[in-house]
Length: 247
Image (cartoon, rainbow, N blue to C red; front, side, top):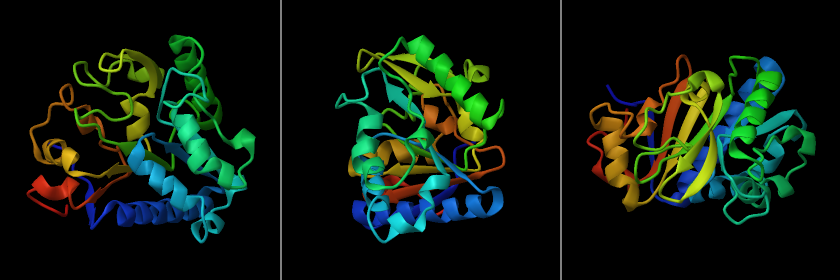
C-alpha cells in the first residue's frame, strides 16, 4: 500500500509552479460553481512560495474571486507572524498583499501564543467555519527530506489525536513547537496537492510513493483522501528515482 495519486512531472520548478497555480485556479472555479466559496489550506516552504507569487500576479490574479476565497494554513511554527520562519509571513509577502482578499477571510494559526492554546483555537475556527468534519476544497502540502508533511514528523503515529483536528507538536530537529492539522482533516479534503522539487527530494519521493507503507517512518504516506483527489506536482529532478513517472 502506498500513497499513489496522480503524478505530474514538469521540466523545472518554474513550470511546476505555473501548473500548480493553474490547478489552484481551476479548483477555485469548480468550488465556487458548486458551493459559492473556495476554502484552501496553504503550506509553507520554498516550492509553494513560487506558486503563491504566480497567483498574486496577472493573469491568474484576476482568475480568482478573492472576496469568496477563504484561506487557512496546514501548519505553522510557533513564532510571531512577522518572524522570518512564519508560514503566514511568507504567504503574506508572496500572495496576500498582492490580491484583494478581505482580511477577515484569512485565518492564520497564532504561533505567538501557547502551542496547545493555538491548536485548540484553530480547531475551534475550523469547526465554526467548516463543521466537525471539515472538507477543504484544496489542501496544499510539501514533502520534507525525512518524509514529513505539514508538521507530521517521523517517529510517532501521524494519526494520533485525529479527533482534535489540530494539534501541537514538538519538532526535535528544529527544537521548536509547531501547530499542525491532523491527517483526518487532510484526508477529508476534496483535493490534496503535493508540491515537490529538487534532486534532494528524489529518494524520499520514491520511498513515499512506491515504497512499503510505514506512515510512522514516512508520515506523508498517511495522506490518502477518503473521497477526494490526490495529485503530485513534481519537477524532473525530484522524479528522478521514481520507477513510474505517471500514476
